[in-house]
Image (cartoon, rainbow, N blue to C red; front, side):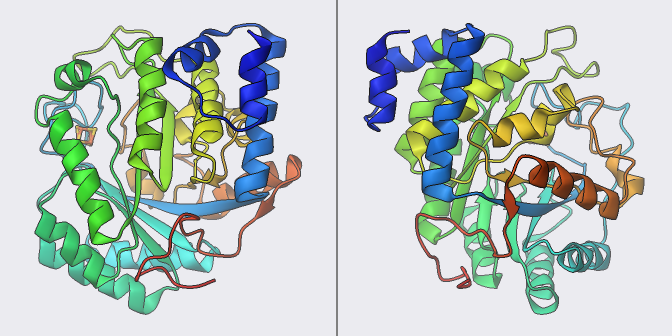
Length: 354
Ligand code: SF4
């Protein structure tokens, strides 16, 4: 690694594609540790020591799409499907608020059973009954739908692009196009959402050059939140038999995402913790991450939201997850935010002051 790249990181100069590729290709343990330390320093400077907890509610595992890597894809007939009813989702959101979470993330497959009216009603109910910010992660809808959810009180929207390589995107997503995903991300920003996206690390056919372009794409899109997790191969998908992504490459991308984008919210993902249950979350938090999304979905549903196999935290109660995550955060000298954890880039109409 040339001295010059480290100096550029220290002086916060922009890294180009070639430099990102050489950092992603790095394997020397000492140099990797140095990279994580530099990302951690930038994290501390731009987003501080607080970790934001977002309660994740996986409310339906029905999906109309057939993404090749996904365990809840439409054609997987082996999975037991479930849908939570509106009052059950509301009760879960209230439970999350009672556990002290200031955000709930409502996530599902692309399930049109939940009509625009139903979701608007749900968002209003939650805003009225629980003191939380709302993040939606429910896939592709129309501009009008997104606008109505925002008007109803949704604060944030997550929709990953998974890879910035349009050919690879097309191979993996038979039901959507990269172009449309970019259009949606622009709509969400126009409407006023705090907007999140992200990628999967180690997808079959993905190169280091692709990952470097992903990181530059994060910067170009000026995202508020960026989720980066490893690809974990699901046996009941067309990609069965492919190797998993690695924790190491995921940590490198997290660190470089922090270095390049500075003040975004970056979660330590459950997928990374699934690859490294002992310390995956702590490693991510020490390599640039500042968010954790504890699962608050009712236990009876959790094993069926199987985007990838062997997912952790599916048998623990909400309280046990809460205790475990807090212990892990305190063990590395970090604190837990009491605020909503809104974007550090802008305030939106729906963003409540804190
Ligand atoms: S990744 Fe999302 S959109 Fe694709 S099949 Fe899975 S749940 Fe559906």
